[in-house]
Amino acid sequence: MSAIVLGYDRSPGAERALETAIEVAKRYEVPLVLVHGIHPPGGVGEEARQARAALDESADRVTAPAVAAAEAAGVPVVVEVVDDKPAQALVAAADRHDAAVIVVGTWNESPMRGALLGSVAHKLLQLSTRPVLCVPGPA
Image (cartoon, rainbow, N blue to C red; front, side, top):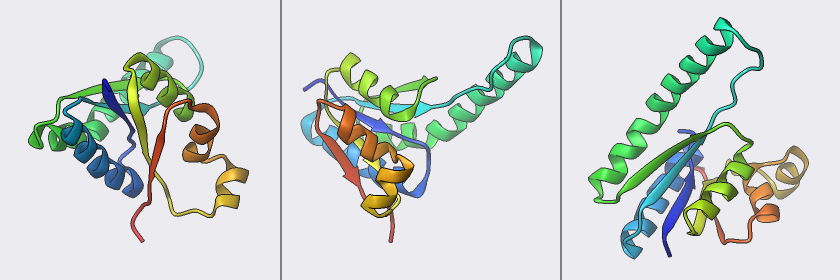
């Protein structure tokens, strides 16, 4: 086991998943790989560069509290900000880091809604060859 991969976007479900991922990483003494996906708008030129810079800055603000929580628990953390669809980004990160498990939060949606609307957790269950731990969001 080389790492625990966590999909993180600072939503309530992601916050609960963060707690679980830190606990698992600490128990097995492996690093936490925090994956945050952003997808910049298309285009080229100055507007596209400014949009990308704003997204990068936003990603730093989003991930900083999670990094602080992991470090406070004594868990080494790696942050990956990726330009890809969330499920594909998580599977790729898990492969790169030989992850034991991918951890994601859920929004307490029904299985039918997840299947129809394409939740990240549902897509991961279809794509990943590694275990996926789905942590329910707050009630």
